[in-house]
Length: 268
Image 1 (cartoon, rainbow, N blue to C red):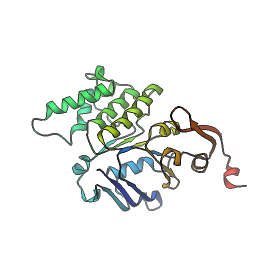
Image 2 (cartoon, rainbow, N blue to C red):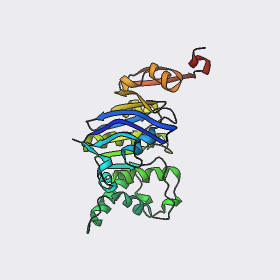
Image 3 (cartoon, rainbow, N blue to C red):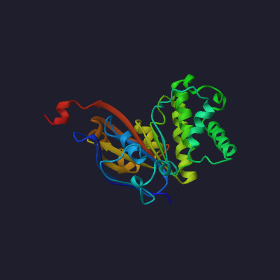
Image 4 (spheres, one colour):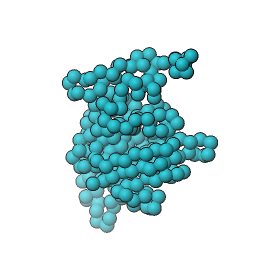
């Protein structure tokens, strides 16, 4: 069973700019875990700490009990896959070859046939088989996102991290992707950690929710019913809302109200 433990993690780009503070999280079961919170609370930074793109100032990140600080980047890539929010790829490469990059942690002599099978399987899942010969830098933003998710799926890691996987996707495909990720986590028994801004999408599809507040602290962690409450949303996001129950799926349904004015927040 894969485990992900974050112990007493602080991160900052300099001593005067702490992004994450005293992060403690222990994930011992497979599932879809959604990280939510306002802009600037450190959601993407948390994802980068777990994937060893950046190193915490203090504290530890442990995968299966092993501190990733003591692992090489290749060793980390064999257990943790990472898909950024917006791809920085600007090279002229086919979609097939772009997705193939995600197989770098599995590449062995004579493995190209298996790698291609995985690439085409991921393309089929993401419904982009027709884009295989297209150049990645010629695609739309939404097509970029689909290719990036496919590149994450082919990594076959025990932990998969996706930063805003539904960005630039239409509503229909947002639902498809979240249903897919939840199903993949359950079927393969892996931990999928995603950053999400839509509270209702998070409530419907996540197994557990991690809510961050400023300054980069975990405000709440638990099931959608435990975390996505009117009180928590008002405290963390500064907006009034009503949370009811989605009668069809039995999950919280957020109905947003008006933003809280500064004098209300300050209690004046």
